[in-house]
Length: 35
Image (tube, rainbow, N blue to C red; front, side, top):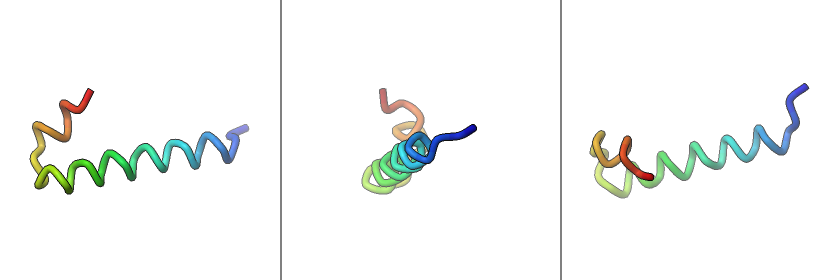
């Protein structure tokens, strides 16, 4: 079973990563090395 909370959390993480990538100007390197 897959809890909706975890699904929502994963989606929010993906959205925040994508938003950071857009703010950085779409640089692949900064998108991959964020942590």
